[in-house]
Length: 194
Image (tube, rainbow, N blue to C red):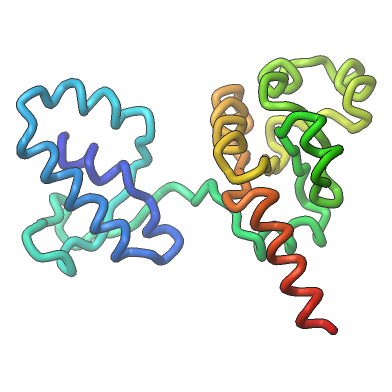
């Protein structure tokens, strides 16, 4: 069970970054081997569990408890700049910016996003559709809709995503790079077009 729990904390392999994922697992295994009070660490790790099976044959000193079965059953919940651009172009998502309203007024926003500050996300996603439309001027998303949360640098958007998932919005994701990355990439793309 402990090995499965340690494995479950790193799903980066779903994005093809097997080596960084294995490095993180090696560190966790070391922590567990050297820690007397494993129960405390175990309860902390359970917050971020995803059932993952990674190829340990490539990692010296670690053995897979599942033999040759290697896969990750959880899709990544982080969206890259390019993925977000494609999703926005396809109109297949609702992009929710969870920064405070003053931040958006001062710095700008990703085109097509709506603003629901982080401290309102839980309440907003539980509103009845009429109240949501009245307050946010958009149709309330259903639990099967694809939501992507963004903020300044990916911290608040992760919290908003976790809130949405806990409320049953299982397709919720967050834009890891946030507004900072968006602006940098947009400027870079515009320079390349010129």
